[in-house]
Length: 433
Image 1 (cartoon, rainbow, N blue to C red):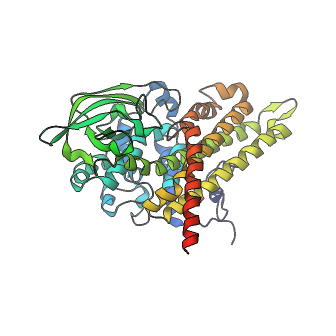
Image 2: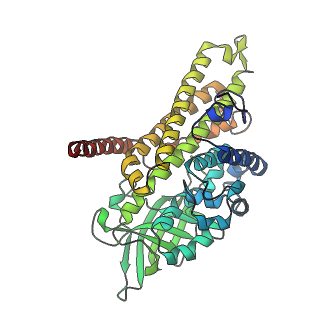
Image 3: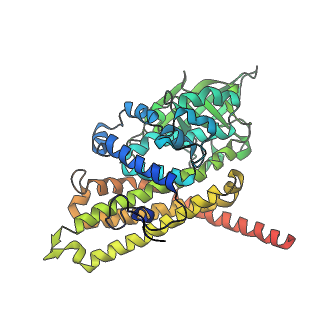
């Protein structure tokens, strides 16, 4: 087997190894077709617009419709597989629903993230649509999905509360049924709800029963009377429209219950595998963009009579960044492969702790790369314009890879507990055999 034609930048570590022409068992012509199409589409439509969006404090609303027309919303809402009946809403690059897999999903986010802050526009769709797809009634899916997948309406996930972040079991937002059983009356508050400011539907964890996980249900709440939203200004991911949501006597039809009462905690947990993987996808490309810009700078910037790259300490920095990023990328591909070959139920059981630790590593590597590339740029690494602008932006964004999807300390503990639990299950199976 020989090298194939390289794609994209030839600067060291600026692209995944398979982009450089090296062999990989994971990718085929369909993946290359998507990659090539997305690279051109992103460059033509928004790769140079991030600074303008940052200055305006928002991504232009019309861009969402442009993305819908391009066939981006269906794969964004789907993850590793696309239902056959969703194809009528369009799939980017003309990829067939039957072709789409987890590696297409990886490429999608890798290339979108390379284009700047566009990913912020879709966070609500990424995490809000799957519970509807997998657990919603036929009535809800037939009513809501056409609106969401065509770009007419937007959706977000509302789980976190002021006093319940990673500790989902202790949410306090209530949903009480009316005496006739036809509606739920919702009261409570949600915080850190991404894309909440411009969402039409809130996929919401609510308490319909007693304390703990078994008292939690999931309710799709349309924006209506009694819902108030207020933007939360944050540094990392400032374009994500992070929102404080208040529900005050909000009347929701009982038909908008997702699945069954008391299973909301389980629905929330099964959503985490892809969310944490998706965060890792973005962190990886952010690392590569920062390394690209830093390497190009180091090859031309002179200090003490030689370029930066001629200095051993700078090469040491790049070597350490490279080994961390490529190792994270290889681990990510392995997890994508495993998710591809396990049922959703089995993947949730076996890979919950793995994806938690993977996401932790993504945050740690991203933080390391951000720190090192800022130091290579020096003062330019602190400026929001010019050659160091993308490195500066990435250094602000890394907190968004560390906290959302479960904070670092909580996920490390989860990863260990899950590994111990699986080990005991495997030992019991060995005994039976």
